[in-house]
Every structure is written in structure tokens, then in C-alpha cells.
Length: 114
Length: 113
Image (cartoon, rainbow over all chains, first blue to last red; front, side, top):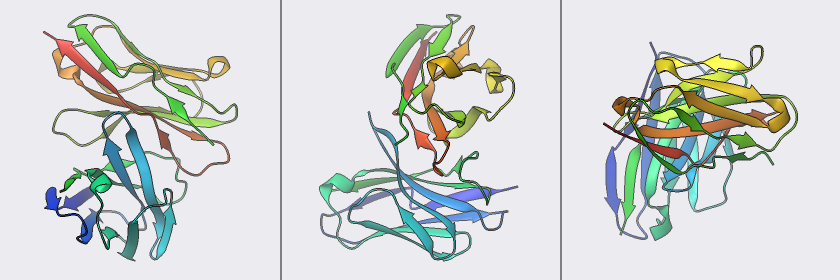
């Protein structure tokens, strides 16, 4: 069966510090991968998605970036965090092919920027 | 651009009450529709989905949703809620010509015993 992992589960970082959140998927190959930010009253905001290694699509211009160094690894990064980057970050995967299929979500990372 | 509207942001019901959560989308072409649920402390997970065929879709835990194309709606229903249905519910849509699924802002359901 497939599983998705995210770490860390919680993170407190000062403004201006770098960020690296990691997501890995097991039990499937060539998945579509997604990063979302979930904020109260704003739902799920798609940040990045990837259909393959090294292929990243950005949905929202901001100081975050994403990379996919391996088939089942998706990393969310920032060089300098802003207060507004605080939130709950979710990674998800779906079967390769269409992006319009069921997504499977990880446990999330709670990021607090102080 | 595709968009999804969930009209009820916070709903409070007593156990055994009937539930209907509204979801409307903005595109008139072919759509794939989803409801996801996030129980307290758990991962966001699929509740049900509609791709084609019977517009009345049955999901897990007694939930159902009806796709009404003329109303651009995909409302979620359950005839009798339980305390364990307390969760946040998200409607999502993929519209023809777009590759991504767009999520609504979510509805928090609180069921009072």
C-alpha cells in the first residue's frame, strides 16, 4: 500500500531564516506531487505541483520554492522566511497521468514564523 | 479561472439532524467533483467523487452528494449526522481545460451530542 510522510511535524523558525520541508511517498512510482498551504478561512491553497523529477509548476508567486530531486521526494524551501509564511503545509500525491484524480494527503507540517 | 464556493463556513448540528453542505463551481463544461474530509487529528481524505454517470454519488460513512449541472452544484448530504462526523469538509473541482484541482475554503461541521 502507499504511504506519504512529511517532516518535521512542527517547526518554529525566526523571520529571515531558511526553510526546508520534506515529503516522501512510498509504494508507488512516478506520482504527481503537490504542496498546499492550509490557512483558517482560506481553505487549501495550491503552491506547487510536479508531474515528474525536476518538473515543478508554481501556482502562487512568493518567496517559497519547490524541488523534486527524486521520483518520490518533494521538498518545499525558502531562503528567507516571512511572518506571512506561517501556516499548515500539506503534501499530497496522486496517480501519474491526469492531475484530476484523487489526491492522498500527508499529515502536514505546522510552521510558525516568529 | 475555475473557482469553488462553499457557502457555509461553520455549521453546528445536533446528533440525528440532517446535513446539507453547499458547493458551487464556476465552470459550465465537463467537471470532476470531490468532497474531502479532515477529521480532528487525521489526514485530509477523500469522502466521495463524481467523474461521470449517475449524478447521485455515495461515499463513505453514509454521505452522498448530488451533481446538478444546471445549478453548477455538488452539495453534500447525510440524513442523520453523528458526533463522529465532526470535521472540516472541503469541496474540490477540476474543470475542463484545467489540469489542477481547486479546493473550496472548507466548512467546519460541529455535531453536538
